[in-house]
Image (cartoon, rainbow, N blue to C red):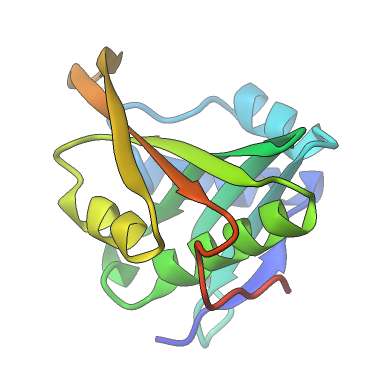
Length: 158
């Protein structure tokens, strides 16, 4: 699948709400949380669409000084394993680098082995654990970090 990426705006709120519901049904972000992220001048979100133009994923990053945080990456279940998450992550890494961040951080469920493999492929390493970080179900978070000088060798910032 070739994913087309575009920067999300507040006008895309319902698209993100709908994707959030199918990608994280056990613990979705609220529309208010997503609107807050889309409105933040320190955040950038992307929407991925398939060949038919249907939204199949999204992701966001926040930059503060020389550090950035991957806020979320979600890919619709039917589009997983097709490079959508990788394309989104590469866009996040590229924008964070352009915004001046030297390092990027994220939290991921240890049960999300596919995401961890993707992050490792882009230079992320585990730096710690946060007990009881996620809910529904309760699970610790794997904290990961990557230097932006080499993370995400292939970047796309459409």
